[in-house]
Length: 227
Length: 227
DNA sequence: TGTACATCAGTGAACGCGCGTTCACTGATGTAC
DNA sequence: TGTACATCAGTGAACGCGCGTTCACTGATGTAC
Image (tube, rainbow over all chains, first blue to last red):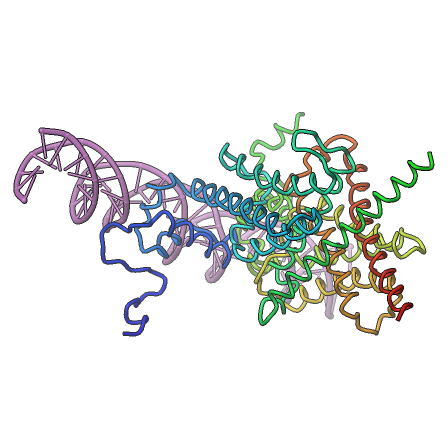
């Protein structure tokens, strides 16, 4: 039997048990898909419920209200990003530059994998509960630690101005790349062998930033040698 | 008389003439403000009309429908960005690097000046009329020309792969910086003398990217000298 | 300078719609004995 | 193993609301003569 006969209304997921079984996850996935399709402006709790094959009141059971669902998804997103950054860091081996580069690749890959979540994560002026706060801080810290390793700054010590600037630069590069990629500005890379190419592009672009930082460091060291 | 007596309902702008006089512009400004306040998800044509002191049907006269208004604002935004980039380019003087740096400063300043418009400009999968298409292409071209000058590539000639990569890197840096700044990630810079500091940070971060490109160029030249 | 008239810009009531949330409910599950 | 019961997960009808858009309209403006 073709799937079309099992699902007469493709907008409405079907189910033969009274209890869904994994509704929480289904709602999160549907939210992600809906955000990716229509953006934040196109999100609606009812549509998410519809896609999950559940009545409009069901989500309230798991998330309270619409805001609660979005906040849960954003929290999850930051946790996922943190994990991705740490995986990239591990893959990079012993060279801090390589580790940072792989973090960048993971950052962009995460955005591509969860475009809906990514758009949710960096909205201005959103009321932000403690869990979301903690999750986003953890992601930031993962990136910050990459920069720490680059400069050999231990975990407890605060970064100086130049190091913070380096962090801002690195973050800007990967964030901007991710954002532009999602906006379809590098569109051909969505198709064929484009994924590997895209990873290469992220590495290259991030490497330019790291090279620039190295050049700055060198200039600074030389001038202090002279003095 | 305090303004509160002149405007009993602050959400509803008032007017004593039947004709507004400059409704088109007022609608655009109100849209910008509303988008900046609430994001794309919080936009509504009725609210924009309310803020412009006009009936809900009035905007249709100028923009057809809600989509038309948003598209007009996005078009205007790209035209403004193009102008800003060209102004930055002019300010940069004769050094291509400085010109590109000032373009970056202008890019970020534009985003800060029109946060609502900026959010509108880079949404994925938006149906896009020919005017908007043209306006966004012009902005892209302004940035591309900055990169052309850096490499000495004349206007007609297409960029090679490395040059396109350089463009992507530069664009990513400034775009990411602008986006993160609007998301409040560099929050202290919104307040006191932060504006000048922020310009400095953009220049610095973009300069790292340019230094990295210069290093790459140098390495390439040397290796071809050897060969 | 005055008058008739076309055109333009905005009105306000009305429409149907999808939304978020509530509520009393019910079907299913699991636990105590 | 069976039964009573508490708890949990989802129902579906209902609510009030703000939305985008339409429509016949009207007040103001500008133009022709």
